[in-house]
Length: 151
Image 1: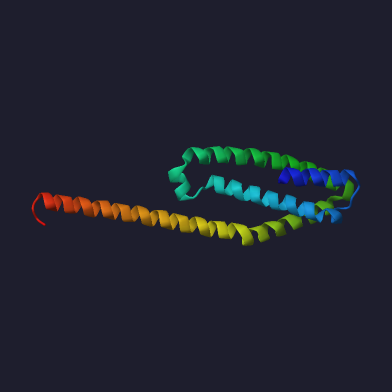
Image 2: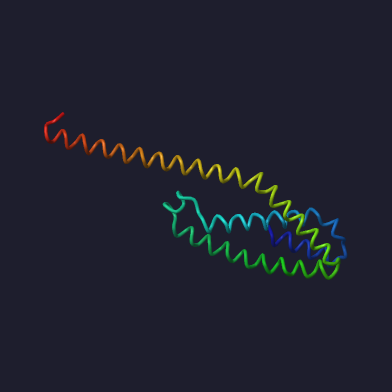
């Protein structure tokens, strides 16, 4: 998504459009950058249930996110150069401000809900694990007692 928005913005700049007419594309690009930063954060600290059930997938995901993050840095620098050269540094400052707003909105709307879902999954997995440990322990105690004739 970031690459598509980046290419659209670059084409619009080359066609001589002004910054205000590119707000939709800039918003898409900002959202994609926010999603990428969030994915990077999640790859660095995956939830417990993912650590237990998919260590190799976590490593692969972390490498993919890192690669995308490097590409995003390049796109960001190229976009900053284009916009600063054609519209001045203040235009880039406006875009950075818009990006900050997009990140805040994205955090409120999407990331908090995803984190709540992950917390719920962690609680459910932990509860099931505890129930299994208690059940197995009770069965072992019962079997020992039954074997010794205490029950």
